[in-house]
Image (tube, rainbow, N blue to C red):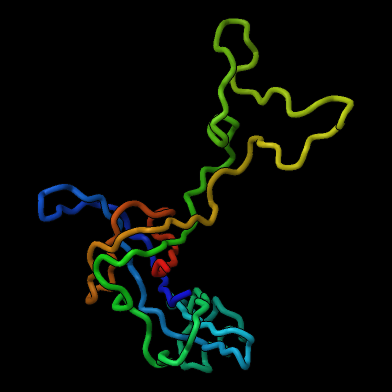
Length: 207
């Protein structure tokens, strides 16, 4: 794996390419992410880089978390995340990870949490067909049979039923970076990405 960066989804817009075609893009506020810990094969059993993102108030962290960040002279950070790497030889602890990690036209994978839809029924959650809408029908949007009677005499685990929809970790792979704004730490990516504006994202280069 490679080092990635953490960011925040700002929203979607469109830009025009050289031929005048409209290109839908998502704007991401990415980094800077200070390095909070370096894990090595000898001390931890694997090589990894731990980075932080988004400063917060010290009262929001425990003393253990504050002590961990103080070892690398970092302020209180809301999010910590590891990236497993093959080697740590070229890592500089005093240099934060910024959007300069990427280049224009790079292909990246972006991970976030999908928008929560609350408690949803069978048709919305699983795309089930509805019952007849004619007069007298009592099976418009109800579940119907969920299993046999005497045998097995129970509902099998994993049966698709109504329940909580959305709010899951989703990874969109193979997205193209259209433009990078190093001054404002912005990544402009072609297409849509998971989550609502303000949601936390993890951006890594496609291996």
